[in-house]
Length: 112
Length: 113
Image (cartoon, rainbow over all chains, first blue to last red; front, side, top):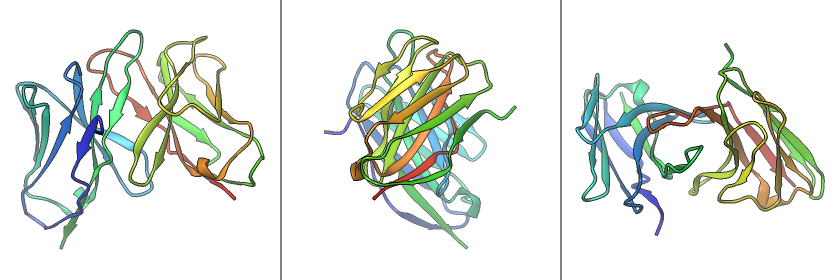
């Protein structure tokens, strides 16, 4: 079983739609959680951290359910510029550095 | 402030050739990382360096060596390239903490024939 699992998609949605991505992780001792965004042929960039209480950044809302080991990302009012691969990332923190475990990503294509 | 830079951007090697991928960061970060990204596999950690003078193996270290030259620079060496090492290689840096962020370089696309 992969440590971080995501639906690879693709999710094809029209502009203005609401879309949700889910992710599960296997290590119950994981300490912190992130969503990264990766545009085609570019490097991953942090989209947002995910906190236990849930957090929102504009059109983006992230949720964490530690009991179910489940993370979600909701995008409201999708824009063409949201088209990218969204990576679910889990930090198995230990010692002097942090090791990020990446999911394989979910591809989002927003259609005009 | 350039962030994380990598050279080269593209490289084609023949099986058995060697090469070094260079990475530098100007954010005064303590930790640096090398990942490879393959279709359907996600990013996988090759080696990391928690601080200047230390390096440790990640998930897929075989066939690679690293050098943490100083706080800014972390290089990845392929001694005898194999077709299985065809991939996109990303360098990243961070300063550890529970809520820190890893910042990635633009990547090196390597093809081994």
